[in-house]
Length: 161
Ligand SMILES: Nc1ncnc2c1ncn2[C@@H]1O[C@H](COP(=O)(O)OP(=O)(O)O)[C@@H](O)[C@H]1O
Ligand SMILES: O=C(O)C1=C[C@@H](OP(=O)(O)O)[C@@H](O)[C@H](O)C1
Ligand SMILES: [Mg+2]
Image (cartoon, rainbow, N blue to C red; front, side, top):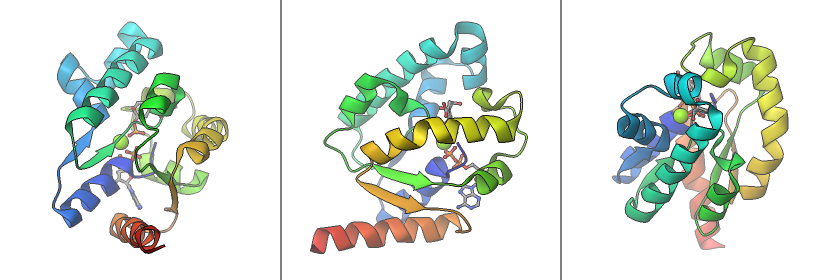
């Protein structure tokens, strides 16, 4: 949340001339309602099930850049689905994340104290992100285009190695 997955994913896809897809947008399109509404009306578990299905479908039919939601990897089946893919973990510190997401209410898990909620989510999820990532890229103090360029450079280094 606020790491820049959606923003940097779009920049990267444009840079590479490939398609971009975001599982949050896929869930919203399939359900015809906002993510915040899904959380309020049906709960987080239902959202995770919809998200798991969206990740499965996107990985099967999409060949470009795919952005996931920040909590997607909480689902064990989703983690398994990611096993053979290049997975980039966009690292963000508390201060930059808070600044980026502001006080917008479109992220239901941030309701009730943005700073404290982001800290709790970062503490809880960072071990999972690190475990799943094939590439870890810091984003603090970097513009989305710089982050996209850093991902590209690191992937090229890996290809040469
Ligand atoms: N590297 C960055 N520097 C500054 N702002 C950023 C950066 N990456 C994303 N943003 C901004 O932060 C907000 C959240 O970005 P977003 O791409 O939706 O993150 P995520 O998909 O990881 O939640 C957006 O307003 C976006 O413009
Ligand atoms: O961290 C999370 O659990 C969530 C992150 C959101 O996506 P972004 O990480 O793209 O904001 C979205 O999937 C939903 O609000 C839940
Ligand atoms: Mg996003």
